[in-house]
Amino acid sequence: MNRILSVLIAVLFVGFTANAQLTLNGVTLPAKLSFNSQTLVLNGGGIRTKFMFKLYTIGLYLPQKSTDGDAVLKADKTMAVHFEITSSMINSDNMSEAINEGFDLSTNGNTTKVRTRIDALLKAFSSEELNIGDKFDILYNPGVGVQTYKNGKLKSTLAGLDFKEALFGIWISENSVSSKLKKEMLGQ
Image (tube, rainbow, N blue to C red; front, top):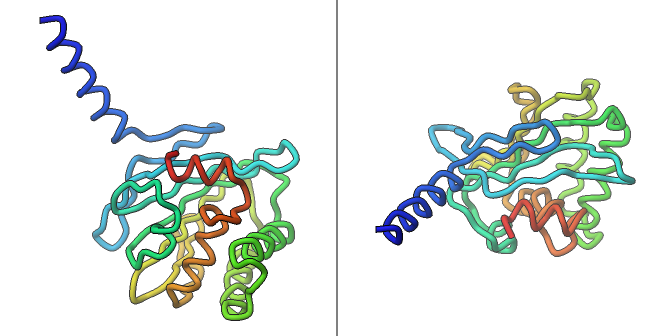
């Protein structure tokens, strides 16, 4: 009887944690996000730090969980990253610099093919001041492209699976901005 009870508790615990939200650095990443009638599940999340500053909390959302970063990058499926700014150290200028650095890393310095779309994305981030608590959703929607939302408002739509691969690669490519953050987002 004790063995059956232990198994039942383990099954319930696994079921609960598989659907649990994640709270990091005072930010709650929801267990699920819905876009265009599709529900995405939280794959994993972490905190982007630089020089000991906790800059933002971020989560990766997929149709189903995956620990394979390459497969996620190449997939032509709806997916998203959701992040919230948690530091006053972030402003439009250094966010633009960080985005450029991230694209350089994720593309091994070969940003030529996606440069005009990077510039359009930077414009979306620099069009308004950035503040602690600002929330961003970067959604890849097959056939549409990458849609960037700030606090629920659409700021840009940029076409191309290649652009999605480069953008999401900032966090989950072999040359991501942080190997620790990559592992956390991939649930490794």
